[in-house]
Length: 356
Image (tube, rainbow, N blue to C red; front, side, top):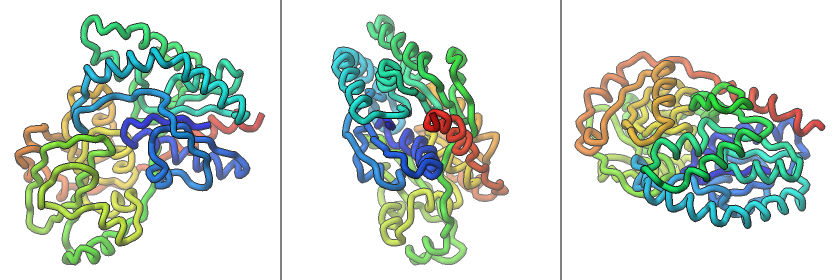
């Protein structure tokens, strides 16, 4: 059983490569997925057949837009979720029993872990973050949800294992944490195909704007540089300055990670999926600063040690005042990709639970 939070798509892109590799090792393994991510999204990441139960097993975080956390709405969501938690916990226990789950893997809802422990089934968390360490630094005084934070920590501590892929938050309070390498898919590079589909010259450089799956809009002004074309993914408002990435993907039958492997630079926010896939392909990053996302410092530090990276402010993003930084990244030597060793390392940790 796999429970995935629907805070954007990063948790699915983190869990899916591990689950796919795990099913290669255990071909007869049945997969039940609990999430409110639509099947159309999951099908892009999960291989083979699986049963989907549309069910939100945590609130994630509420966002104003891809770059700004809505703290007040998040606090309200956690209050409401805590009131419904006993009913949901009973439902989860029943699902584990009915489906005879041999392993409950969560990225990274905590209630499925509690339900698994109550049913005496293996409970493993897999994530570069945890919701207690994300939520707690953002809480206003007297938020009233401190008991919820304590319950979340207790649930993670009680899991059999907390697998923390790089780049991850420290989580020093978790004695059951086990660090592994980064987790990402590997794409098939096809820059010539992309340029041909867009009727671009053979020497045209390709820049990708990617802000993930969060709703809301963000002011974006993409600088126009001779010899560089923009591909715009997701909901970022880039005006008329770029080609729609989804149209390119549909035309060429490519996966998004294939596009990541095909471009010369990516403009994005600090987020696990984007940073991990960039490192896998040695892709230079232009990162928009996020001062209200507690995970961001560890993502940025890790990426800066493995890739050419420049940061810009939200104001620069809105005005387009970053052409010089984009040019620096396009001129920088491109490093070799970093193999996503965390996939097999995580599978090695999970396999014993399925071999019993």
